[in-house]
Image 1 (cartoon, helix red, strand yellow):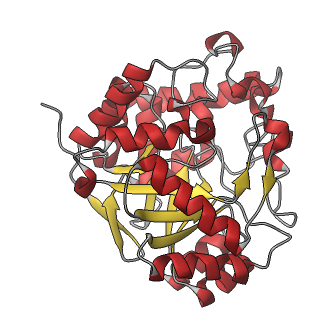
Image 2 (tube, one colour; image 1 turned 120 degrees about the vertical axis):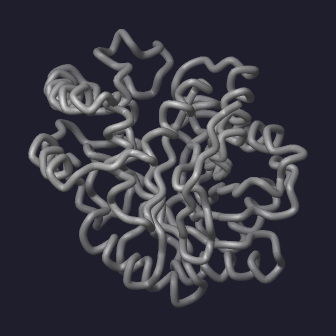
Length: 338
């Protein structure tokens, strides 16, 4: 019997478990995945009470949504399904472009509903803000979907503070999804302040810094040849060596507390506020079980201060995204190392 996941947190008016499951790696980007193991991983999460599943239409070119739909069949009422639209992708990464038009948002929603096999999406994100489409137009499309009952709550991903405010004036924004971990601190500051002023929750993706804080990576040899992280700047020679020294220091702290470095890193994210929900990925059921324990770990003020000294903002080497994905961030977004 899996341990049940106890706490709930609020993303705006949406109640969710304090930790979700990022499903992206169950379809691509991390090398080959066994379909049976992927399904077992999602079922393990649901059985343990991790009932917020995060996917997107572009993950696996629709495969990930179909996987999530298959996993929740017969259990739909238990699950908060979050998916995304706004990135149009061909059969290769080079074909990616942003499209936040009202028409594309509504058509993408219909396609996601079909792949998921559900009649509504609980939380529907604009995956990236389209610089060529006013955010007001994008949000009008979202508002129409809410009125039609096809989506229940609206989210943004990687949006700037001014954009968040403008979007929220059109339709209530429930959650901002941004990368946030001990190694990635960009969201801290004005974006976080705006979210808290407006009552918007924060969903932290890559809370284990794309696996750097998972405890399972020591070098590029630990990554499959098809793993996209091989082109990520933080995994480049030199950068990776420096970053692993940061990890080693954190591992020493974790070991002294009887924890894995992943559990310590996730616990740190949980301690950033009751309105913050991390969504670590997991390629195996055992990863889900290990990650769950982080939500019940109490970190003292002394430990939090120590973690800040060991891994301050800007300490990690390399941009957090490769050239393709960093080019899809807002033009005025500061591209710090963190």
